[in-house]
Length: 426
Image (cartoon, rainbow, N blue to C red; front, side, top):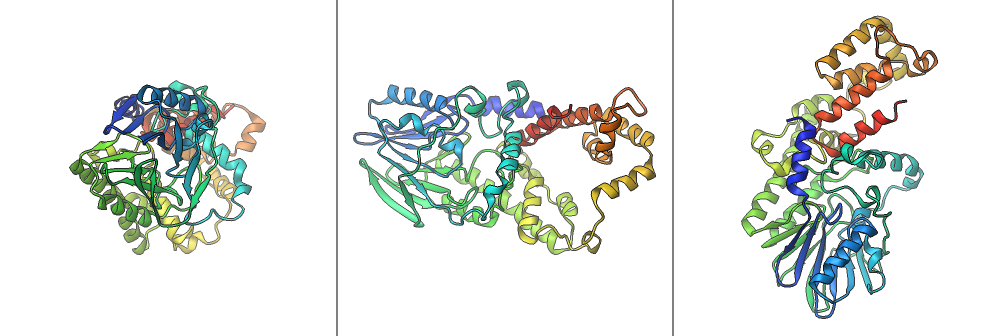
């Protein structure tokens, strides 16, 4: 199957709307929105762990809860601050009395807000907000967000209680629970442990495909070693049910230990293998070539690259530990890309370059075609707007290469970004 076909199959198998009754008071809502939600029925009210991504999906959740109980939602606990876990909270504002969250372990870099424009653009491309349903398929770890499905922009309730402790134990409306800081995908991530029920809610530190150890929309370094520590902490609880913020719940102690344990071990393998390659003086490109998941991991559907990829993870780790410089003195003071590309164009010749690009497209070597197309002087091409050496112009070639590459990749994020890039070519 192509990458596109694998992503479709994974989406159809994993994101059917499903209500799981864990026990008489705990319910898990899968594919009611892009993220999951968990309802816990207390003595007089409902405690909601995460609230989906949009008010439209939130209304669907509210309606489903009414079928289960006539008790109102009075407490919302956010596992972390990503808007896809908070965007439906506003539909419960008429009954909610407390909204609980944890402060980040580390604050965002100062002046991060100065990147708002480019981060919004890159985020939109990663999540495929500008794509049709056919182009989007899914978002890898869930169905499309409500904002792209006519369900409205996120309507978030601000936290009324913000904890800075490592862990907090509470009894909320008769429900005993422990909230524990568990830094991983985010700095404010927590897990919720319900000891009486042997249930653990893990937010985004575990989901059933390869995680975003680095997000192509642009993020600060996610400390993978600390994330692995958080997975160890999750495994230390003798849970009979694990309820994630995305993908299917895991039911049964052995399944949890096997699946989350393998997830954890695969992440550690990539981290340590990357560091070993770096320690040998390998460049980022050489390290990416060396670090591949072993065959045993490749057979696991829940490690499939439907969201993040191993390659992006390796690059994120590389930059996170040593920054941009790979130790090669040639890379200390390079000429500009524009100057270097002009030299290569002069050596190759435009006709020969186009011939090779066309050959790559014919043989479906789309990535090579895209990298060769980077040699084109787009400013000059814009002036001329003429065909060179064939029926198809440079822009049409690049669009074809982007769309061809999009069919090959399994990562929803990568697919979205490639298609979004193609749609911007006029």
